[in-house]
Length: 327
Ligand code: UDP
Image (cartoon, rainbow, N blue to C red; front, side, top):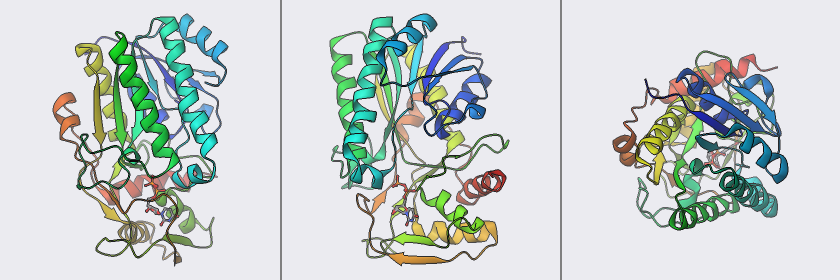
């Protein structure tokens, strides 16, 4: 058993955050969730306690951090939809960059020097080598990816100038829901493929759009590395152990190292739901790279991460079980 820690979790009421908070609680840590509930939910916080607050309001943020005095911060709170970031870039830079700087300032004021940061495969843009490892050039092709590169850069500069240390986890495509059934993706406006496919199967949308069939991939649709949200949550618990023990900065890809095309995901979703929901092929969506697959050897070797759910049908089944429960 590792020593119980006090962890301040921004965005802990959201999709990935809530799964991580549950895992942190199970690991014995004392959690304070800080979330503005813009996309998250109070009921999703299954461990620790929730303070409703916005990273844009630096005063209350500083007060809450200083009062809690955490050993480390995990920073999930962010805007995450690629297409939306292309339409609303300033909103993305404000929420993802400015608010992260607020958090770093508040941490510095409270003397907190350890951070796990939610980054993304979108920092790579269109990777030249697939799978992409962490040394691949940072060349984002959308504002979402660019906002995450900017913060990674700020983290590196801060680490170079002080005793601040961080682990940046670059998420590939996070999907699925906790098999125990109490939490899952619950943001109504989510545009992610698996969520959209299942909502279409449920009848919430008349059809699923397939964005682009002329990509340089075997079936012409985009390829992504879909990782189960509980495996990703566990990566955070292990990254926390790593940074508290070693006091070292690291940047780690989080994915399984294999990919599925949009068509493959659609077929699997039809099989799991037994619903032959309609699809329509249409043009490319702005900001989408053709293929993203993780080289995750570094995560495995540095933290001992061993994924449990590398199985697309299982991922989709857990998402479907959850989706059916949602009103
Ligand atoms: N996609 C699609 N139809 C949808 C939603 C997504 O064809 O309704 C495609 C999208 O163009 C991309 C892939 O599915 O190629 C994964 O998109 P998602 O939004 O799930 O994740 P992203 O990789 O953009 O973070």
